[in-house]
Length: 247
Ligand SMILES: NC(=O)c1ccc[n+]([C@@H]2O[C@H](COP(=O)([O-])OP(=O)(O)OC[C@H]3O[C@@H](n4cnc5c(N)ncnc54)[C@H](O)[C@@H]3O)[C@@H](O)[C@H]2O)c1
Image (tube, rainbow, N blue to C red):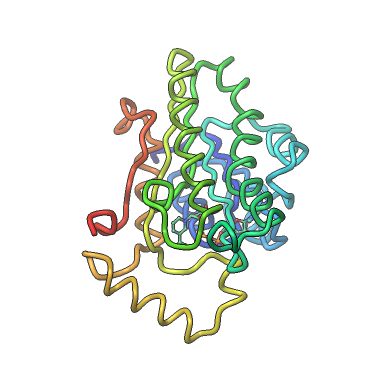
């Protein structure tokens, strides 16, 4: 198994992409530390062979410290994020929403990188993969704070890659386009009709005519974290969008 003997820390693992990545790493023999503010993380971890679940707010250094107590992560995969419907263009985004979106999507990635990097540097090995978005490359309409947070994640990955290549560390940003589900914080605020409309829009706009599947994003994430195949890939924004950015 590709990740036997490796410890993987996954931030935002209670649903969607993070949960799919947890399952994929687990199937390849990894030991997992799973973090989420959603208490379901405990049951998700209990259902996997070598996983522990930590309930916590990823923006808080105490959550990151708890995640590495007794664990030395070889890989950090960060997927925690929000995209509240209440935020829009600049006039339509409250300062409170701006601060929350930047804190959850970007600062939490800094907090976890800040916490795991000293150990990775000491061991002279480590891989970091943040989940950005095509919105970090080409802004989507009326999602200013989200787009800026995702652009920040791409630059954070590039900066870590540059500063720590000599320490044996790789860092990249995965940039999905439309995925099969809207994010959990939006889902709660959308009707079934809204969600069906989103899928139809994606099929109409995306050249490959469909949304991306969490399982295929998870397979790509594992490939990017696998030194045997991606050992020379660092500082990159890897786009998996069905061709969306071509439009
Ligand atoms: N769904 C999409 O279409 C899409 C597209 C492009 C990029 N992305 C990105 O992929 C990542 C995963 O998205 P998803 O679709 O799986 O969304 P999701 O909402 O299903 O998963 C996000 C997880 O992050 C957790 N989380 C949110 N705030 C947190 C906090 N403060 N502390 C700890 N955990 C927190 C949530 O509880 C949830 O489990 C996000 O970063 C998102 O921006 C998603």
